Length: 107
Image (cartoon, rainbow, N blue to C red; front, top):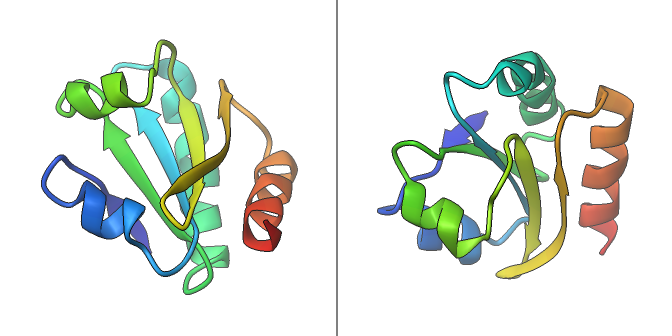
């Protein structure tokens, strides 16, 4: 299951989550973001119940993007127990994304 994170649900769904979270900061007009969507959706299914995978639309939630210092998209943040464990900017293949998510689970 893929989540949509907003100002209203971010603290509850991400910072207070009882499982690790991967947050994809994206925009609808962003070509690389669109290319990453199928991979992000595949990861959401693969890790369902182990990791919460969700998106933040930077156009609609600009203050969340600012809070995390997002300057380029797509940007991915890996959060566990309310702390950012890691982040990466730009596209990646599904093996690299899976490796990052596995590292998040083990962190």
